[in-house]
Image (cartoon, rainbow, N blue to C red):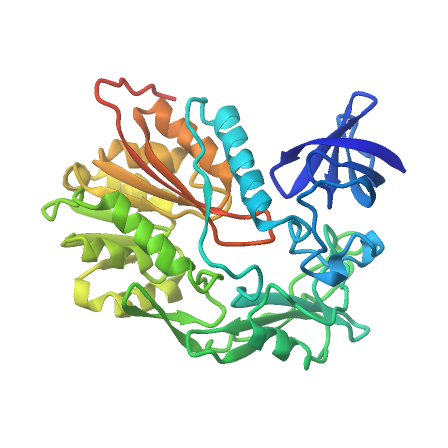
Length: 422
């Protein structure tokens, strides 16, 4: 056990302390507290990982955990994961998220960018998850993983989930190892999707895991989600925002940041476009030539149907390959000059090559929708090195009681800037 003075917050929902000059990342703590912690990983010479088990000097922002089964009173191995900020009052949660963003911008984006306050999007502390993944093991247990592990913890409640999902979860029984996804669509009905685990086989090393023989994938149910005054068809197991107010919140932010900037005569891009949420935003703003790019063929098929009235070109492709091809096509590249780009990459970010190819198209504005502050800051550093900078930055607490949040930024070319080449 270690007695630690907690001094900071790190990306990933853990706090920071020091012991004998070594950094210790501490789960279930709050900066400003003194905690007693159990070391869970001492394998790295530069830092250890630990979890708080007692709080001799608690923060005034500590509260009883929203998820009683994740309380500090329980053994750390029995605490379910997924609500790592549930012991912190909401106001402080958002302040810590802002601090994480500020530190990421300073470290990876070159500094000089002010982190905005992280705005609450609803008054509801819990009951917001419209999509929940649980796990089943060979012993018949069904539940979330324990925090920072792949060990299943049976629980009585899912306080972050929509009430209908929490109720459905209480009726679940295991049918072999695998995942169980519960999805509540706009119609309020819960779908239960079961996915079997991969089979274990020998021959490629001890404990090797190989894919089970591939069976034809059943055609997924198609749901209808509603956002921004439109209906969007999406597979039940496809991507849609998990907070019921997220799609409308992000659509409104993108529309506001691009208001009066969409030239109808230019070509506009919606990259990592999914089923077309932001392509529809561009259409509402007056864009007449819109291309949405997404690697999932089924998502693109839905996008074509969802956006049929807007004449959107929907392309199945990896974004990096699409942009490389578009950049080499001089006529196509010229069409994008003065247009806008909406960039909504996965958690890992867009990456240097994608950013450089976006800049090469010379858009008048880029709106970047980010779900990871560090990945966003890295990409922003590349944009800034190539002559684009943040004109406005917003942040939204779309995932209360977790460390996650969403950032939306407008980037524009800097007048007189000379882009470096990497």
